[in-house]
Length: 447
Image (tube, rainbow, N blue to C red):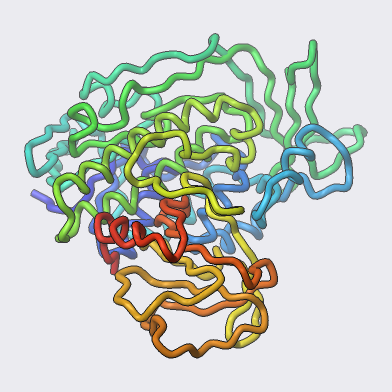
């Protein structure tokens, strides 16, 4: 019997991305996929702004960019253009048009022999401290946790008897990928043909000069009743289309599945390794995934939020992993702004270029932390012209970084804790020491 930390059923974007994020954190994985090989044709065709941020943090975006085509780069006015231009504190204000097979292959190449094809799962059983998965080939894998990322007809979800309810009238799309010979004016943007104010045909540019046509017939979007076994307390977690099915337009399924993976992997890493987490904290970490991502899947029905991936936030969800009070651009439960910062060498960069997936980070904005022990990496961001050395202040360790920025004012003073999924978990002042309790409860060193 094979033993790993996490078994992943399904080798699509959500399952592969969970594995890709877990491996560098020292978590052993086994991906089981019933397909004979990685996807070769079809499926999703677009990475939204948020997915590009996730792939940048994971270190694979640069590998995808040469094969993709950016949309919303023109100087024209449209409803979609207004959405993209309106995104605040983000670098990737565009779609990246690229086929799902290319995305999967990049991840598959990074994962090596952790992915097994021709493995049809026939049994999944959960015990108090483990999950056992069996395939039709006779393979048996035991793990601490299992992820069901096996698509809309999920065997895992059906085995758990989790409801899968519809949220909209049924829709069906006809999809055609082709190389087009036309005298219609062609531009590297998404063109839609509307009837009665609704898009009925979408003409989408693709990589290598290819085009994709969507023709709308009807749709049914569905959402699982829960994303976690045993009413949110179990060891089997759903992600991607196994948990929610959306319209194919804009690659909503791929992008939401990637967001699931980014939200889930750090939680699995924290739970699968030995740590000092209390039973209550472990439950908070696991259940917050169910609450946040299930509610997010419902939010994605809103078109602008769906296509950008930026309109989604967790601020209204009552989970212990979201605490504090809004201070300026720093809002608990919202995506962390990708702010511009300058390092001690004088090099200007973005925050997302300076983070690695897996850890909470503390942003000390406007001034330095006192000379106290801090478990998480500390990124100090001071006003331009500030000096680096102050007696009695927090001393740099491996992982700590110092920056200045012109958007930080002399009177600014905030402590911001950014979760590993790049959502803001806590915002407060230097005088309020509740941030220490937050870190003490949920921080687990990932490496």
